[in-house]
Amino acid sequence: MSAMPVLASFGGAFEFIFTPQRSNVTGGNGVGGIHQVVELALTQLEVTVLAMALALVIALPAGLYFGHRGTGELLAIGLGNAGRAVPELALIALMAAVIGVGLLNLTVALAILGIPPILTNTFVGIREVDRASVEAARGIGMTEFEIVRKVEAPMAIPSIFTGIRTATINIVATATIAPLAGVATLGEFIIGENVYGDNGVLAGAILVALLALALEFGLAAIQRRLTSKGLKLTPV
Amino acid sequence: MASATTLAAVGEVGKGFFHERTTQSCQAKPSHLFCWDWAREHIDRYGTPTLQQFELVAISVVLGFTVAFALALLAHRRRWLRPPLLAGTGVLYAVPSVAFFLLLLPITGRGRETAIIALSAYTLQIIYRNVTVGLGNVPESAKDAARGMGMTKRQILWRVELPLAIPEIIGGLRIATVSTVAIATLAVFAHAGGLGTQIYGEANLHFPTSIIIAGGIAMLMALTFDAILLTIQRFSTPWRRVRSS
Image (cartoon, rainbow over all chains, first blue to last red):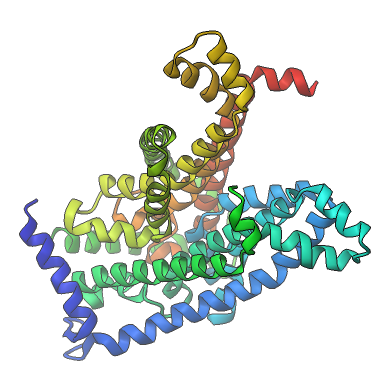
């Protein structure tokens, strides 16, 4: 396990990322290279964004509503727990085998993975807002909608973002096995091992990790900007 | 080279599976969602993968818990360690498990060790955060009382703070364990076996019955782990039951 072969493997992977390599399978056609990398990365980003948008549209209003009303705790918490137990590989494979492959089906399957963490964390975040603040808002004549928008949601931002980040991490990670559902993401280099070879597999892994980390850091930056100054001052 | 031959072997076996399946009664309806006859005849096929999956999860969670718990105790004493540890475990959590398995390939090769390293790294953030939160939530009054009784720092930690933090600690352990069971199906990409072997692969991918059985076993395993940990949580915090009843 000396350092040299390890370095050589990673070197080969980086070469694969930047310049097309010859593959034994495609009969001389180059595989890899920066063009294919960018194309696949954009597809992975696209399905991730689409699935996140779908999950947000469903889970965020539901979490805000149930959290504000203080009802549906069993549903919100139970769904979060059950969602975690769903094996991603089985979900994607089953969807591909039963409903069929394609971008739309994949988006729906990935959104299913994203809904539980957003719903649960939004619900919990809203529930944990100090009831006195809510009563004060009601006292100065805010409507229920204003209370959610101006008081509860801003104070629940850290928890809501925990949900959004968990959902994004799950979705972008699972989008790696999207080639099983007929959508070529960066996972193509990994699933298509026979075509892309060991360099391709490692390159795929590096690229997927970088994409996920970029999303994670991006969301953390957005969270910092959205958190109100007053909340940042008080140590949580 | 070794991996190429293994893959070829897997391919051969896969063809065997597929042939075997298409000659069964399910052949009449290729779109059959669940084939009971096949399931009854082949249920013993899932024994070894289930056991492998169980081992992967158990070892990874125990390993992850040990490391995360130690890190949390360290951060409890030295506050300045908290931000870097949270960030570091956060990075490990964000790396997709499939990528993690494969990034380890040049270093640890294919197999169980690779899967266990990646899976336990994934649990660190969840457990570390919950232990830290649990210790942070211990009321100052309880610590004061302990100090008043003449307890040392170490005694306060082990006899007052940690017992009071048990709900959060086990809460983290539950989340980590359930997620790990689900993610361990992906260990097939590290050639580490597990239930993923009955989902991934030429023959299985087009055969819903096998996906449903293997996925179902994984979910059942996750829920069983969850129920066991919940029971442990109840029994280890008797004061909570007294208060609620």
